[in-house]
Length: 507
Ligand code: XMP
Image 1: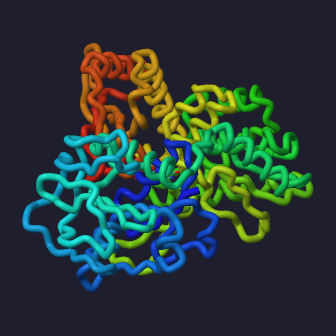
Image 2 (image 1 turned 180 degrees about the vertical axis):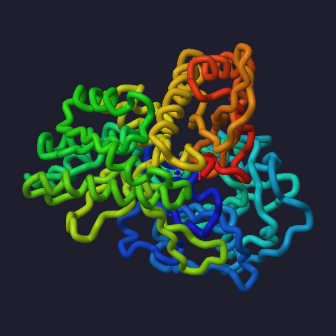
C-alpha cells in the first residue's frame, strides 16, 4: 500500500483516486501524523500545498524514517521541500506558472518517464520555483518556463516533480504514477473491487463472529452496499432497519423495501411517517426541521434496535471522504473530521460498537464494489438524497398537504428524467416547493397557487456543482405535466444557480 502525506493541497484526494485507479491501495495521512509503522507502506507520495517552503508557514514533515528507505515521489510542494532543505534552492518565480505547459526536455532511458516523451502536456500550479537541485539531484525533465520540472536523487528511489500528475490535464499523469508505483516501487496492482470484497468479508467474519449487528438502511448507495457486504459475511445476524420518515420520494418506501427483500436481506420496514410529520407540523426553520428529524430518527431507530435481542454492533455506511483528516491551509495540526450527517450520531446509551465496512472507499469505488457483488444498477446509480428528505425542500411551513404536493411534482420530474435518458447524466435532481403563491389563469378562472422550482446539478462530490443544461423541450413538457396534473401548483421555474455561491439544496 501507498502512504500519501497531505500538506493541504486541494488535489490530495485526487492523488489517492488516481493511485486507486491503478488498483493500488493507498491512504492519506496528515504530514505531521505519519503512521507509526511506515514499514507497512511500500511507497510514499508527498502532496502539494498552498504553503511556501520559504515562508514562516513552512510545513516540516519528519521524514527521517522514510527518506531513502522507501520509494518516494514528491509532488509540487513536496519537490520544493526536498530541494530547499537538502542543498538546493527555491525562489519566487518570475513568470506565472499556472495551467498548461509542455515538457521541452525529458531525460532518455529513465524508467520514471518510460512511455512519456517531449511535448507531453503537464499541469502546473505554483508560485515558487526550484532554482537549484538538491545535493545528488539529477535533472529528469523541463518545460519552457520551468527548468527543474522533474528530478531524482542519485542513490535513492526518490523522485520529485513540480507539476501535478493527478490532475486530468496532465495527459500522461497516470502513466507517470504507474511508472513510479509499479516499475520503480514494485507494487502489485491487485487491489480490485473483487479483492476488496473478499478481504472485507473475511475481516468482517473474523471481527463479528456470531455477534448480531444492526444497520439503518436509507435507500441510498452507501448503506445498501454496506448491507450487502455485511450480509455476505454474517447473513441473518445482520438486522436491517429501513425507516419511512414520511419524507421520502413518492412510493419509495414500498419499492425500496421490496428491493431489499429481493436481495435476501433481513430487513424490517418501519413506517414512522406519522411520528415524523407530527413532530414537524408547522415548523419552518431549516435547522429546527433537521433537529426534529434527527431526534425522531434516533428514537425510532433505538426502539427498533432494542427490540433485537443481544445486538452488539451498529453498522454504518460511512465512506472515506467523511473520515479523512484534513490539513488546514495554515498547516496547523487541525483535524476537522466530518461526522456522518445522515444518522445524526449515536446516542450514548445505545452502547454499541461501530463497524464501518466502507470507510476506506471513495463514492465511485463503493459503486464498483456494489457492481462486483452483482447489485442492481438501479440501486447503485441512484442520485444522492438528503437524510431529512423532502422536509428541506419544502420552504416555509411543513404540512402533510405540502409533502403530498411535492411528492407528486418530484415524481413527474424524476420519471421524465428517466424516460428522456437524462437521469444518469445528472448527479442530483429534485423539486423544491416555494413559500410563495402566484397568480395564474386556468380556463376562465383566476388562480392563486403554489410555485415549484426544479433543480438538476452536475457534480462529482457535492462540494461544487453546476446546473444542468436540460433541453428546453424537456423542461416545457415537464412543466406542462406538473401544472396539469398536480393540483395546487400553477407555476414551475428552473434553478440556474451554480454552487458556489448557491448551495444544491435551498435550505
Ligand atoms: P448543499 O445544499 O450543502 O448540499 O449544497 C450538498 C449535498 O448534501 C446534501 N445535503 C444533506 N444530506 N443531510 C443529508 O444527509 C442534510 O441535512 C443535508 N443537507 C444537504 C444535498 O442533498 C447534496 O447532495
